[in-house]
Amino acid sequence: MSKGEDTRQTIIDTAHKLFTRQGYHGTSMRQLAKEAGIALGGVYNHFSGKEDIFRAVFMENHPFLEMLPAIEGAQGETIEDLVHDAAAQMLAAIKRKPDFINLIFIEIVEFKNTHTHEIFETAFPRGVQIVARMEEAQGSLRAIPALMLIRAFIGLFFSYHLAETMLGEITPPEFRENAMDYQVDILLHGILERSEE
Amino acid sequence: MSKGEDTRQTIIDTAHKLFTRQGYHGTSMRQLAKEAGIALGGVYNHFSGKEDIFRAVFMENHPFLEMLPAIEGAQGETIEDLVHDAAAQMLAAIKRKPDFINLIFIEIVEFKNTHTHEIFETAFPRGVQIVARMEEAQGSLRAIPALMLIRAFIGLFFSYHLAETMLGEITPPEFRENAMDYQVDILLHGILERSEE
DNA sequence: CCTACCGATCGGTAGG
DNA sequence: CCTACCGATCGGTAGG
Image (tube, rainbow over all chains, first blue to last red; front, side):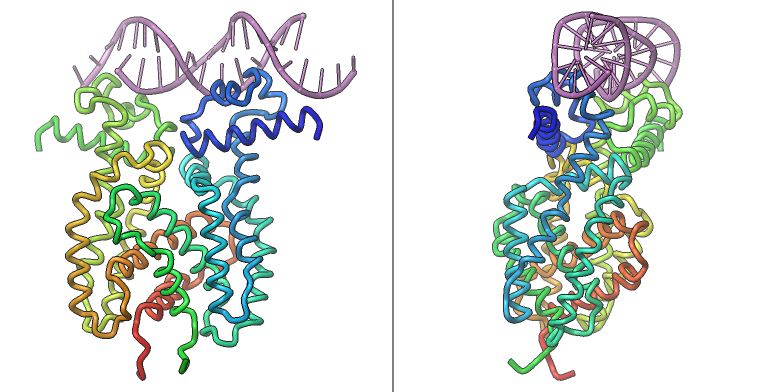
């Protein structure tokens, strides 16, 4: 990696850290430059402006790019095993980068989703492949469009993460203990055909 | 209502509109004052500062205050009817105030949830009552803690709304058609005891 | 509730 | 002529 690419990556990583912790407008170019170890003016050799930096951070760290591999790499013989394994990997991805979903909030609040279509263009083909895989194994699944199943699955993690973020420190423990297990259980029960087990 | 209270309310309503559309840091005190029809300095006769205004907006317009009545007012003989009716009312509440959830994003990104505990203190007792009601009617419900059922139900709407916001304009229609119906169907199937219907 | 104004800091750019 | 970056400062705006 050249010196220039290295500096550019340092700026992106520093911006990612600061934006998710302090928000976009809450982070100044001066603070960003200082923490990245370069002068303010130097930032503009790599990016045309502040929004250009957010765009790069968003493209490199979008939650979908963490979630898709977790789903794609799920292992298991039965649907139950597949979903449980995918859920475990999603949970691990969330814990690895606990505030990566903040990027989506910034994108919605500050940029009105103007960058989301770029992410979607790269994520969509991979989503199609996942749908195809699910439809192959659809033996014991209920007759629900695969897109709706994926949406329910991904939605479960967004709402789980949102609830943990919002309520984590202020709710009684029984509101959160084993919450993920229960939510996955409800989802599984909701998408599987009823059968005599 | 006195003149002063009227002005205060105008500031809150204007701030609510601007914050949800432009974000917190994206809205200046000057713009807020101008759109509220008063001078910049006059705002500080009603609020101690910008954060104080957000706090008032947040307390008056928190999504929970829209969602709780929708759940509390649900009508129906069976669990299915109750959930379907509650879902319909939640959906109506979302459509009435399409970007009210942005307040939560601002609270998370800009304020790190510092105001959420205030909301929770007023919302919690009402949540307890809903739990009690659900446990009375728990005949055909699976053995899942009522708090987990409420969490799944509320989470469904957050993730639905988030998906609509993020993907609304850029996804093919089949990703969204009847999405709410399918998600409610999956939830219902997931929380109801299997029975010979 | 307004006019007038503050210390400081904002995102971005100058020449070298 | 290139790259990567500097110290200094631009015109405007932030909350108060």
